[in-house]
Image (cartoon, one colour):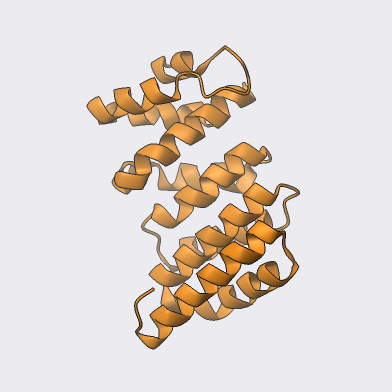
Length: 178
């Protein structure tokens, strides 16, 4: 077992035991990020969830940590069934530097997440799709209808988030400030 997975194991399954320590450890030694990526594929769903949470937190300010693992992250995101893994991947996918083919793969993953039973996964997928559309204008045309539909048919939180995302995309399209 890798060091990071060991830090994330055990305790109350509803807790984020070890996440803060894992984040601190990786920020002090970026080479440990490999252990987080590996832990997102761990047999224990609690370790997977905590590893994804830590990776998501780290990559908010250090998205470059994902780059060496881009293919693995895309693969893990594509195969994730666990809602807590899906919502963290929905947040991380837009942070990857993707080529045209990989962008399409990321959009397909996020589109699938829109059909998840979890409203959190759906809301994070909406956010991820909007971020991809902002980063890659050529994909806006295919992403906007997905966001509009989710905004019209989703939960109250999805409708509120969708309105903000669509407004930001519209402002970006017309050259306004979001």
